[in-house]
Length: 149
Figure: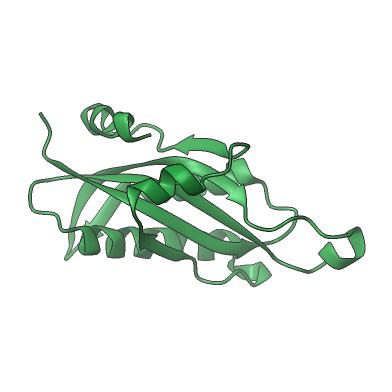
């Protein structure tokens, strides 16, 4: 069995109102495919659901206004020596860089990336949320994480 660490995760940021949630989810899960710590990289797998935290406003109000989007899910990191706070910090760096590269020109803030309780993931994820997961992840890592998703 693969040595791994599973961390329940919340990612939230503001996005332009025309942003596509599926693209946002793919951006987050892709950014988490390989994480880096102290010059070494390790495989990871992020699976969860993305959704808007706010309701869309009127067409007039939505022009130029950013909307809040979130992902609630589970991050699995491969390796025996990982500590949750370090894995979350590594994910925060990778996700922040990806969001900034994609949405930074429209004023999106640096995303909040934090560990939360597993029960919060299950209880607070709205039912119409869109499921996303890291593509081409290490199969053994996906197998370890799947029971959580």
